[in-house]
Image (cartoon, one colour):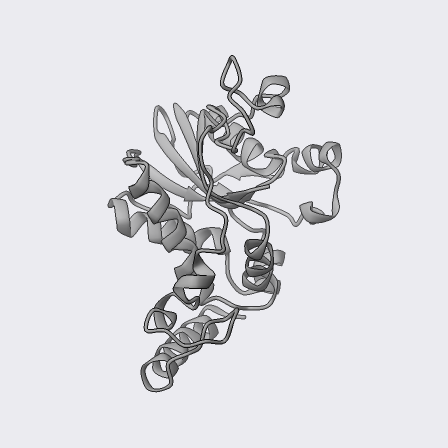
Amino acid sequence: MLASDIMFKTVYDGLLDLFFPRNCLVCRGWHPSTAELVLCPQCLERIPANSPPFCSHCSRHLPARTDDGLCGDCRKNPPAFDQAWVAARYEGLLVELVRQHKFSGKTALRRTFAHIILAFLRHYKITLTADMIVPVPLSSVRLRERGYNQSLFLAQALGQYSGIPVRTDILERPSASLRQSGLGRKERFTNMQEAFRINPSVTLQKRTIILVDDLLTTGATASQAARTLKEHGASTVTLLALAAA
């Protein structure tokens, strides 16, 4: 899907919403909010929000507080990002919605996902401060297959909310790696080695960065992206993700 096709689809969807308000994507019921968020309030409430206690490093929900505030994964293998905020848990209804968004062209869900993240930030009074927002990129091959980068959608919403510039010219993904969803934990980290590079024409010296991704599973992708940014001069990298498994 080309950029022109995406723009046409966005305009087309907007006209459909104006003259033929869509029903909830899940229950098929109609509510005034479904034109914007695709989901009705009842189905939106079914998405499991992330809640305290959070791991102080990766922000995953902890079943119980730990002495050091860390989850087991971060204690054993700390990710390269400095901190993270995760808005929801990747379970239940959200699993199917993310799959539809990523693999079935349901781009209108980007507004729902942005709503979930912004509601989380407001609820916990989290103020975003950074020099730039950087979405985790897709390779050119994967971008042609999908037609859009779901992480860029989230980054754009966060940029509008915070006023922080969104930069897509910083982090690059030179080649398509194996899909992370089909790999085990160890294989995911191996698969991400040297997966990213920095555009040689930019400088990151002492820059603070918010890295945006849709999912935090093992943390391999976000950790390698953060490591690449920091190796090229970034002072801090904060991860902001829609959901964590």
